[in-house]
Image (cartoon, rainbow, N blue to C red):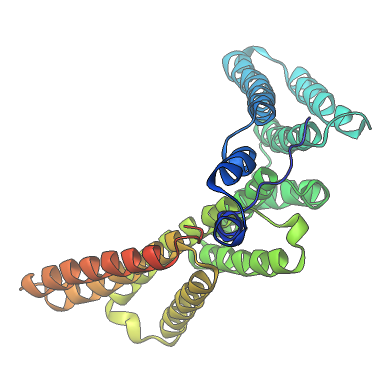
Length: 313
């Protein structure tokens, strides 16, 4: 696929516009290619959309074919069909002339088909194995593809499977959100170490959002219980606060507005869960605290937004 030149950031364009010794006409002419979207970029975007859409529709067609004809297919043909599709997607990814994005998409579909193969195996033979055991074996088989391809959607699939296995094994969300916070920390370190192979901002948001949701929900329920003073629950609450504070400091440093909004809402929910439990006979104080904290958070976010005009939000 065609590659276009890297665009200058908003900060770089502003600095050039303010300090370059150019007339307004020269600035307008010189910055036009940096501001306007070029035809080659539209072409590249269209190629990506068609490629992703075509492979996705092919995968969905395969899934619906199985779902509609499941009872009429013998076990042998079930395994044969899945293996044919798996090899059909996987083998072209080893060809040298195939574009990198196509290889990554093919390997991602192949990773999903590995799970389909395990699902067929479990349904046919009724092994009685736990869900986390199948997922663990699934992860072992695709982990090399995940690291070699370094494809963000494939990484998200990997994390989704691992979180599902953790929840199925521990039967709670504590291990899930601790894992997600850990992955976010490692991702930030990786982006600092390997900026040329860094993960995009939306990938971090995809991991942070469920981590904050799960941790907030579990902590809100936990602090309303009478057994909150148990040793492990204090440890878990302290870990939750440490993760939130560390993430807040990181978001301030990186000028990430959305994670700050998530953290603010998370702390408001946890605080109100405890206040409502304590003053359940008088909802005036919880309502006052909720309204005040929300208004304060909004003004704080607006202040940050105005201060970070060139930051990423």
